[in-house]
Length: 208
Image 1 (cartoon, one colour):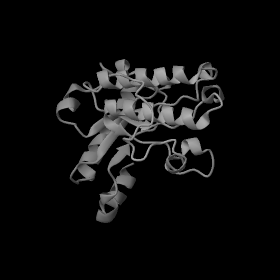
Image 2: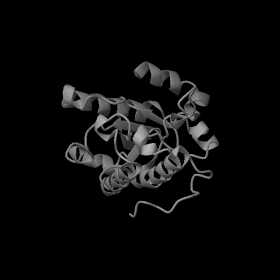
Image 3: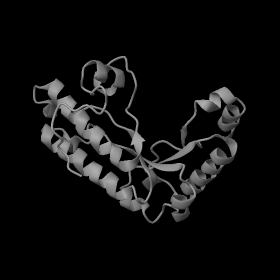
């Protein structure tokens, strides 16, 4: 990482394009020594603060590592709330990697989105939360033979929910060669994502 930061820091044009650095993507925390992981995270953050000087500052993104937000309450440094406003916790929220949800109807997925939104909202007072990965991918059962409607409702619910974490979101990913439910631009083209993103075709399903 140090060599990468040095490379970015010496090129002012490149530095202008860097807004955030993910310190470590999806670490399996249960298989790691957390004290060593946190030593790495704090050291990497220090390198970013001192090596990439720009305004606004480059954000350090700390992946939650498949842990609940509550697990982080006693581990997130309290002084980061006051001083490290450029450090966010990263959550990846998908609906297709848990085989237990394969037979869920759409309404159960929407309910889970609402629950995630409330979770983001209640925990964002402890640390800013970025939803760093989400998509429109759903198990086949949730599409119920009405793919366009289902994906649009799913998109609108997620857009409303993921604003609640305080640090915004990133869709995964911008463009794909196939699987349009994973492509931001193709989802826009198919009207699965609204344009503008604040437009809604359906009544809200979540009430915050």
